[in-house]
Length: 273
Image 1 (cartoon, helix red, strand yellow):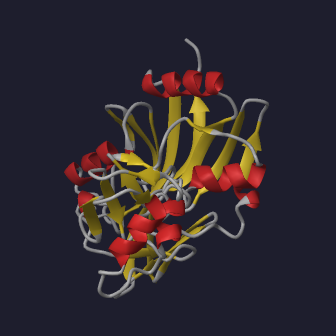
Image 2 (cartoon, one colour):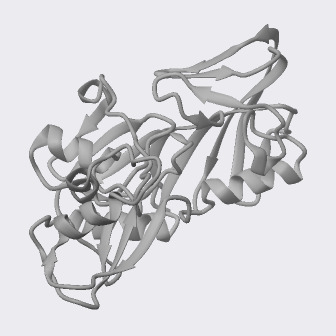
């Protein structure tokens, strides 16, 4: 998945990491979009399989260096502060746009939801769960390690209910389906080139959709990938989602990234019995 633009080289003599990366890049055709220093600062360079952000790091002959010369880029949401929906002494809930990773990726440690919010607040935060890049919706961040571990365990134990809005290409019956509780399935029959849910708008590429089904459902332990597979089995693919069987392509307007019409709209602690 990450082989395109990846260069693995062995340092031939003592020099700094910046000097070595710059030397490697002189042989790249066409030249990479980022300089050697920018690649190091964005987290696209590894020494002996460990990410290195220190340009002046000394290398010795024989040190293996991996360079992601074409790291994926992600945009800071212009309305990031306004996306914070709730906050407590220990947590912060924010709405992630589709097309933005929740946490650092293998080739980019800077441009992600967690890092952007840490920069906004000038404080360390902790991710308690993840949404896939293409999924929009609420992400719960913790302000300390203790709260993070407690919330992670609640997710693992099925004590946190995730509520989604999803747009499907086929209908699905309401009621319980294992870990999934379908609350509503509303047919929307009108040609449309845009799907909008709160702050998220997806653009439909190609011909407008003639019919969609807006569905609200809840899950406890089921992850988005598993939910997508379940909907494929139900012959109700998510609009824009190849995994669940959709032939439609969606683009999230704010980020310009590929997405599919699934959004987390609530994270609810499970009521105690």
